[in-house]
Amino acid sequence: MAKIALLGHGVVGTGVVNVLKNKAAQLEKLTGEQLELKYILVRHDYDVDYKEKFVTDFTTIETDEEIDIVVEAIGGTDPAYKYVKAALEQGKHVVTSNKELVAKHGCELMNIAKEKNVNLMFEGAVGGAIPVIHGVRNCLEANTVNSVAGILNGTTNYILTKMIEEKQSFDVALKRAQELGYAEADPSADVDGIDTCRKICILADIIFGNHILPENVHTEGIRNVRIEDVDTLKTVGGCIKLLGVAKRAADGKLFIMTAPHVVFNQGILFAATDVFNAAQLETDNAGTMAFYGRGAGSLPTASAVVNDIVECVKADGTIYPVWDDEKPEAVADYKSVPLQFYVATADGAEKVKETFGDVRIIAEGTETAFITEKMTQVRLETALDGLAVKSVLRVL
Ligand code: HSE
Image 1 (cartoon, helix red, strand yellow):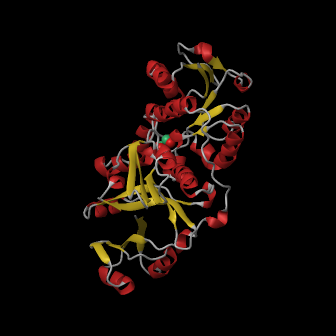
Image 2: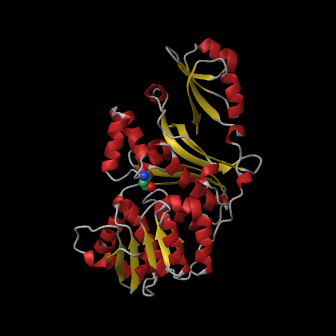
């Protein structure tokens, strides 16, 4: 019998309790043993029929030699970091969906796990239910992954979809996302791109092999997305998505950023709406590859967490490779990497052409909207000096 301790009883924690209970027979068949949820670490009481599992002191879990797997579903880094580190040091596997924790301390924690011969699993931390981490870690070993671009935050994708398709206000859509259990405790982590940034950092850590701290990544959220640009882009088959992107720049450095991007209507990043997440990878041998599914919510996240539990039980002894420590100098200056841009300006098309030459104009009227050739942001900013710019977005 494998014994599990769960830390936290919020959206993800209750989902894990439900999935472990509802799928008990299936999980036993798959692993060859019963999975017993022995403890749930809580801060206060809840009216449920499994109260006997509640404990309020982490020491009970840390010192119980029967506990094989600790599932961290508290969120944030304090006290999650302390508890996860202690559990690993006690030789217990840890499963977490905590992107903040992994983005910040993943390298150190993976090294402890390796030293103690246990696993640190975190599929639920990126893309909710989608097995993107397993895909990248386990299924692409015969490839070099050259780039990844992803819709990695369900809340913002839900908000953008409701604003675009149903003309809901930002506030109404955000409130509904919170009611549905998609949003972070502090939703500015969603709408300001911080959550997406953490997730693209984790994917980049795994793909490119060096820890990237979120504070070294340029990050923009969706607060300034204008409905005028949404409408203009619709006329040419485009839409706006909050993306995390990471790829090797020409100088070998890593170009990584989180920002709203214009996406045109080929492929999964255009098609993923509502709470769905998607990640698209460019690889050398397998070509283009995509992962798609529910990126947030209690049961979708619990699905990934419980899968990780099963993997710890089944693959006892399998230790995942760790990535190397942070090298801030390995991250490229985002303004120096050539990209295409969408620009809307109050100036007329003539003035735009005088400045940019024969660009692709996609709207004329009270505003002119156009798509530039590939250029660095440094060059773009110089060119835009003197124009009455309304918005600038990167084009994927
Ligand atoms: N707030 C996050 C989201 C939860 O909306 O994607 C899942 O990480």
